[in-house]
Amino acid sequence: MLRFCKNCGLLVPHDAHTCPQCGAPVPPPAAPAPGRTAPLYDAPDREDEPAIEAMSQTATTITMILFAIPIVGLVLSLVWSLGGTHDPARKRLARAYLIRTLVVAAAAVLFVLVAALVFSAVLHSQLAYSYYYYR
Ligand SMILES: [Zn+2]
Image (cartoon, rainbow, N blue to C red; front, side, top):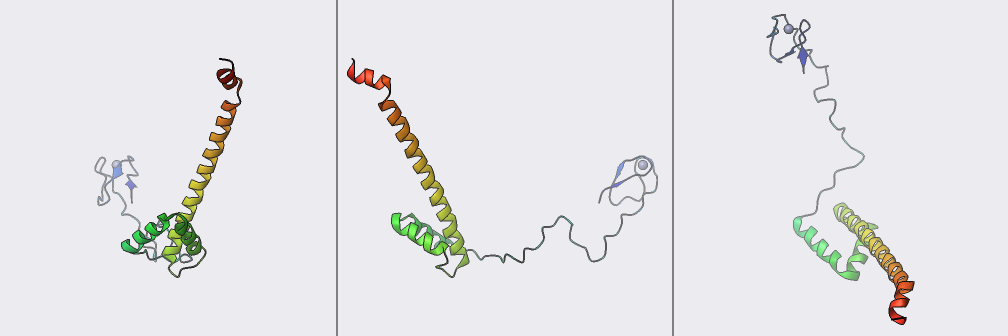
């Protein structure tokens, strides 16, 4: 706990009884309130969300390899996300993978749409016609 000298305002070392600059007596630090030993800024325990025991390295690796198989991976991540497993860690991993798959798929669809629009616009532009037909 930081203490300042009441006389000159100097920051006083925590074990000092007098101010090192002006010599004025410094009162001892206030004792912590009874029953509170942990700092106030400690995160509260989240009892509503029990900790999930992680899968082993081997199980995680095998699961990721399974997810990488084109159709099988999607089906597995869907099934496990929707509760087809008793392991909460596997369910969480499946959900993470499913979200990643959806994001990647959405990005791919968007890319193809934009590419098709650009290609179509260029193909039908006056510039393209003049290039192909009026040379
Ligand atoms: Zn002082």
